[in-house]
Image (cartoon, rainbow, N blue to C red; front, side, top):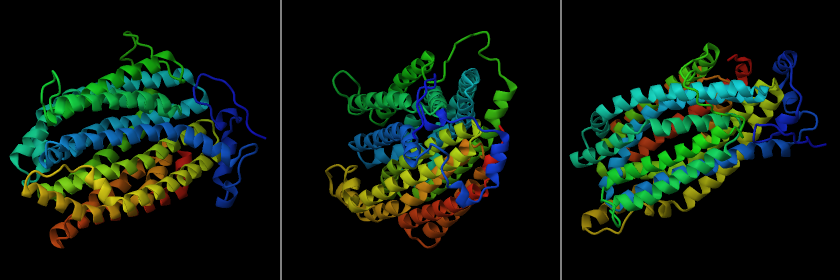
Amino acid sequence: MQPEKTSNKGGLQTTLDVLPFGSEEDMRANLKLSRKERKVLPQNVTSRNLYRDVVKIAGPALAEMLLSSLVRMVDQMMVGTIGLDAIAAVGLVLQPSFLMMSVIMALNTGTTAIIARARGAGENDKADAILRQSLVLCGLISVIVMIFGTFFAGAMVTFMAAGEISQSIIDQGTIYLQIQTVSFIIPSLSMTITAALRGTGNSKPAMIYNIVANLVNIVFNYLLINGIWIFPRWGVAGASAATVIGQTVGLAMAFSYVAKGKYFLRLKINLKNMFVFENNTIRGICNVGIPAMVEQLVMRVGVVIFTRTVAGLGDVSYATFNITLSIQSLSLMNGQAFGTSATSLVGQSIGKRRLDMADHYASSCRRVAQLISIFLAALFAIFAKEWLSLFLTNPLTPEAAAANAEVLKTGVTLMYMVAVIQPIQCSQFCVGGVLRGAGDTRVTALIILFTTVGLRTTFAWLMVDVLHWGLIGAWGAMIIDQAIRTLLFFARYNQGKWKTIKL
């Protein structure tokens, strides 16, 4: 017998919607079950139901993230028409940008988790209030980050250069970053709406408006990087401006989706209560968001230190590193998409007091994501040279030809390492998504502190500066970080304490 669909204002329908609410007694009973007993499916629920629900959320999220990652790759390819210096300039900006965005990402983690619980409990009004307060809080934080980032853009890019990158590259990177920081509030608000929609399980609207934003980005890349028709030739700055134009279009569409009220959320603009915060809502966001903020900041600090170590290898090596990192970002989208599905479905299951469904959704997300990760690993390994060649232009000088040859020689080995890391990082994202959906962000922050700041930076220093293994050593340090982090995430998941967290 299949669960029947019911209609509500939640947009996407899942198997969970037609199951009865659980009780506190049911939740306590679930905690006492053995691992074997937890594998038994609830009555009237099949594996097909579970996989369908997982893919309904992860599919649009994966399409959106893959396209976003592809657009970043296209950015680098189009910037690469100027030369490897331009690729290195954009690469210097990535980690400072991610570091600033990590504050908003952390807020969004809390927003997704508590909206997912509200969705599971059928509390529309509460979800609306969470969205409104999250957007206001996001806007206030964005203004602070915008001011800081704009004034210190040059210092951040110079720091990332580690004294080994030419001044012309630093100058290009500074202009790129300043354009991003001045408009910081635009992608921040869009990300908050996306996080809220994903909490309700509705990832399709976010896919649509982000696809449009990315297409607009590509069009203006073409027009502004090399100066087509009436548009100026802005080079690296043109690529940054094109990104902002695309993000602005995406934000306008995002607001239109949550204004309709079709996807369990309805944003009502009311100047009287816009800045009125409810203690319980803010407490719930902070309980999840602050540890997640620490997690993100710690991770980004570790990555910044790691990236500076790589930047010390010189312009060509740094360009090679950024090319392979850009390709690897495609695979990150797989784990992140299914991690998003796990966050939404686990959060909704806990909100409905159905820990049994939380267990099954968590397992289903991991299985599907693992299959895709194995496929991606094969693509990266078999077509390693072809992937790298996408970023290289026809050399016009002997020096450029030698640089391209060096990129291909080292890059192919790095691509094999990218392939090896696929199943590891995929599992980590899925389990991390489960923990975040339950609001268990404190321990994950400590794990990331230990692995990213402790292990990755230490092994990068050992393998690059002491053993002189170059980029191979740098990527080896990343694999060690990912492997140990995944093991620790699984250990936390198996403890089951995530099922008892109150928000």
